[in-house]
Structure formats: C-alpha cells, structure tokens
Image (cartoon, rainbow, N blue to C red):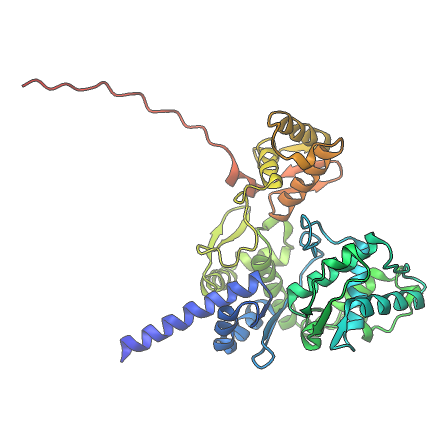
Length: 417
C-alpha cells in the first residue's frame, strides 16, 4: 500500500509541476484550443491554485463548465518587452492605434454575443465619433481595416471570439466581406488581469493624460500588501514580508533572469537568509525547474521546455541569427556598443550573405534589423539599453564563444609480429 501511495503522490506532484509550467507559458488555456492541458489543470485545480497563491500571490481561475483556465498575473514592474503582436504578418508589436481599437472592440463585444464584422466596425466607428479624445475610425481605409483585423485575430487566438462563417482576413481587402462571430463574453471579461477595474477609478477623460502614472498604479494596487503612502501608508510587518517574498518569486517565474543588481536591499537580504533560500529552492523544485544560482543572480531552467514560450538562439529566424552575432560583439559581459556600431555589424552580416534576409535589404533594413535583434536580447535579459549604449549583462556569458586548443596528434603505434 505504501508503494502505491508513494506512486500516486509522485504522479500528482509531477502533474502539478507540469500544470504550473503550462500556465506560466500560457496564462489562458481553453478547452477548445488545448484539451489535454485544460484537463490536467482541471484535475489538479486545488493544488495549482494553492501553489500560485502562496508562491506568487496570483489567482488561478478555473471554469470547467465554461472551458477555460485563467492565471491572473500581476507584474512587479513596468515591462514592455512582451507586447501584443500582430498575428497576420511578421508578428510586429501592436502600436498605439491597435491597442486603442482593442479596447474599443472588446467594449462593443460585451453586449453582442453574436455579430458580424461589418456591424462591429460600424459600432466602433460610432464609439470613436462620440469620444472626442479618440481619433475617428474609417473602415473605408485599408490601413484601418488592417489594424481592425489584427485586433480581431488576437481575440480569436485567445478564444474570446470564434468565427462561425467566413474569414477575418478577407476584411483587409474588401470592406464588404461577410464574417459572422460568436463572442464568449465571460472569457472576454477575464482577459484583463488588473486587480482593479478601470471603471472603478471614475476619472474624467480630460484628466487621464496628466494622471496616467497615478491611474496605472491604482489599477494594479493589491490590498493584501497594505495601503500605499497616498492612502496613509498603513502596512504591517507581515504584509511587507509577504510582498518581499511574492515580488521576488513573481520576477523569478515571470522573467528570463533575476539579477541581484535589480533587487532592493530588502529583497537581497531576504534571499541571503536561510528561510529565503529554502523557499526559493523549494518553489523552483515544486514547479519542476532547475535553479541556477550565481553571484550575479538566479535563472530557472525547464528541462522539458514546457514553460518556454520562445527560445534563443534556436529557431534560426533572421532576427535571432542577427542577435547572436551582435552578442558576439558585446562579449565579455559588461561590454558596451553604440547603436551605430551594432548597425554596422548587421550591415556586414548582410553584405557577407547576399541571399539571406532579403526583406531587410532596403536603405533602412540594417537599422530595423538591429533594432529588432536588440529588443530580442533585452527580452531575454542578455543586454540592457541605456541612452545610446547597449551593454551586455552577466547571462550573456552563456553564449560566449570558447576557443579550445586541439590536442596534439599522437604518433601511430606499429606492432611487429
């Protein structure tokens, strides 16, 4: 009986660890898009919810009948390295216009469980006309239709919108395209992960630009860690300690690398304590990660690559190849180069490979390619950009080229009979 019990306990631990990494990679998992992953999370719902709440202070919502699991993550700091991306083309980040349309489309879809792309475009146009601070939406312009389609395709990818008839992409070429949608209103509401709803702030539109930072902080305020200084600064020792632990582990599990230099004095003291080190190592083990500890910081390695949403340098894309070459010119860690110097490296790479990266052969190609490569390196925590300089960080040493001397050839031995 004891062996069977141990086997069952081991199986549960393995599934919980897998579920943690699945949710870290994809905070929204739907039954329609990924049945096996959803079934595992539904089966291990309680231990998964306890782990995320205790370890990171995050809420895991599982709706078996509605068919989705949503990990509501709240970040520790502003991070623009993982924007929404355009699904149709080369996955360029959303610009300001697309984010505005995303909010407008989501708002209009809340009251329309079934709609067409034409009706939705008309409603967005009317909403823009009412709100003076938002530029008008004209679906007769292809550039506007393209942005509109990018938004809808993003919502389709989340599962909040489902195409019943037609194809969303056809709207780019023809305003008269016929596409019928079914809207999952509940899932649409769950896309926002802010602890406070924007409607609770009740701020006049004309005040938003001047108070943007204040309002953004109010959206992500979490009462479990005490009140802010603006609210009287009432925070207990228990709340401060809880925030210290959660803020460290959130960054460890949500960012590629956690550097000591990026931590506060309180956070470094916590990690230097026996309790802090024990919690750090146990949390990583429970999630199935291998924890790498260095003097400069910490890094989690997933042996099965379940939690990995993007790899580097694997993949062989133009941007990744360029990023790897740029990284060679930023070795050893701590080395700095200016943007023009890195653009020159990209130009040399293009000149030496005439049939490679054809889409970056224009006058602005090397600069654009360099910018995308640097952004990728920043995302992976390998470089930091400050002003006109790009500086490599300690984790870049993992990609440093090592030159080893070949062993001298041994003289051949002959045997005589």
